[in-house]
Length: 196
Image (cartoon, rainbow, N blue to C red; front, side, top):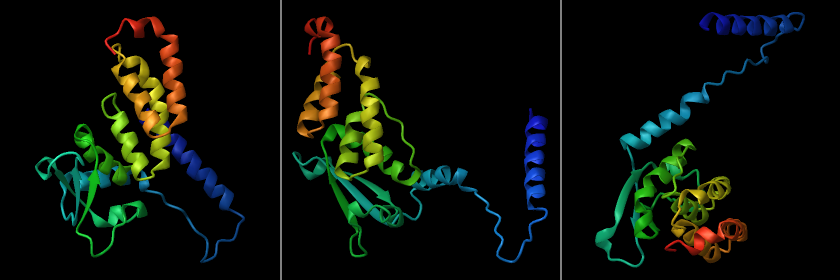
């Protein structure tokens, strides 16, 4: 396998070189190198290590006292790429107010800001969607919205589906409401027999 890949790469480079033959290369000719493939992983390791972090994200439930808050140390430079966080030089921290059940998912959300990669589970989908909504991360918001439809069949108690519908009503997400209602109508008999 290695030999086949090596041969194909050699042939590709040779073909590219042949295309350059007959073309005059001057000092402005550019060869593009792209080594960004590992960048996401490296940025993830920076987040995971917490080394040289210089900014705090304070997470608290607006309905509870300050004792239940969580603090995550991040890098100002990374968050400054997202203007919706309103990061300024004078700020030392940023407070996120979100329900206690979403606190375990804050780190994976913040790590997404570094890496653009995230794992979505049945238990994290709604929280991550809500954080994406709050911080206007449209691409993540839309992707999680599509994932919701895949997660609907995963809960036979129908609690998740009812919760997602209520969430859709609160956030005025008509597509989510429509998808949940359609799923519930297809599974009406099971819904009636469920504890939800």
